[in-house]
Image (cartoon, rainbow, N blue to C red; front, side, top):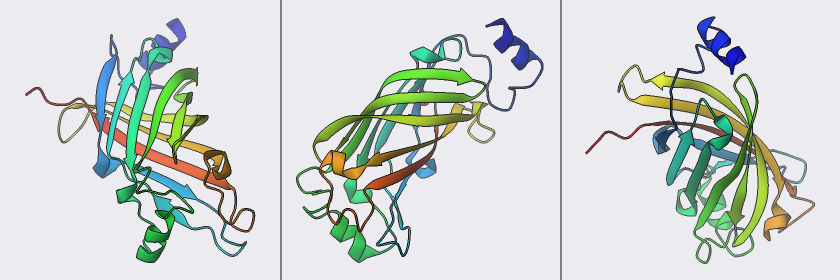
Length: 194
C-alpha cells in the first residue's frame, strides 16, 4: 500500500488513478463501450463484430482492487458486423440462436491486481445458454472526474480469447476458426443522483 501511495504521490500513476477511499459504483456507457470479437474465415480474412453493451455495472475499489467487480449484459439484437446478412446469419440457430438465447452475459468472480494498472478479471461468461469461466486481461486507463460531465468516471481496456465450441457455437469449425479473440474498451461514470 505504501508503494501504491508513493506512486500516486510521485505522479507515476496519476494518469490512471485518483485517490478514492471506498468502492465506487460506475454505470458503463454503451456509447463509449465496444465488445469486439474476431475470428478467422477459411484462412482468408479475420472479420470483427461488435456485440454492443446493453447494461453494465463496475464496482472499483482503488484501496482494495481485489474486491472490485463487473457485470454486463450484451443483447444480441445489437450485434453489428457491418454486413447485415452476416448479422442475421450469426443470430440463427447454427450460431448464437438469438431467438432462444437473446443475451450474452458476463459476471466477474475474482479480480487479481497485477501491479500498476494491470488486472486479471475472472468471471462467468454465458453464451448460447452455456456458462463457462473466462479470464480478461484488463488495463485501467484512467479514473477520476470526467472533464466534460465532471462525474467520477473510469475507463478500461481488456482482452481475452476463447473457443466458441465450448459454448455450443461450433458451426464450420475448423474451417472457420474455433478460437475467438475478444477486445473490449469501456468507460463509465457514477450516475447522477435523482
